Length: 101
Image (cartoon, rainbow, N blue to C red; front, side):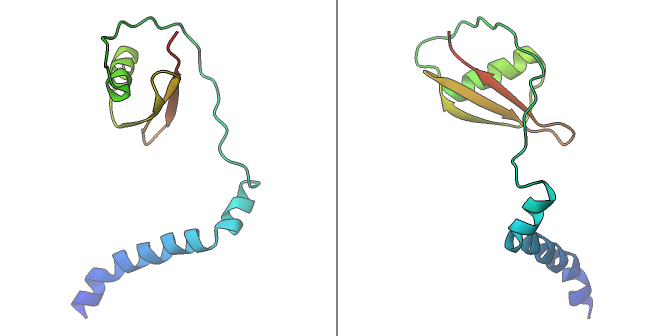
């Protein structure tokens, strides 16, 4: 009995998350079937100086540091084209697009 009481929150969480995954069309219909729309907060020029052979994750950390929003983030893309930095935050997720040049 005590084992069942201990495991109940995990079983309930698993059931709820699985329900959301198995009934995806229902939950998409709640949001008109459209993905989230990003709003442009502001655009600004940024002229960094990076050394040769720098990785995109290093550039992302420098950009977030310069913006004053360091923390958990994800980087996608190649530095030659553009990189997209997704800054994870419980209150507001931000996406920064950096294009070299």
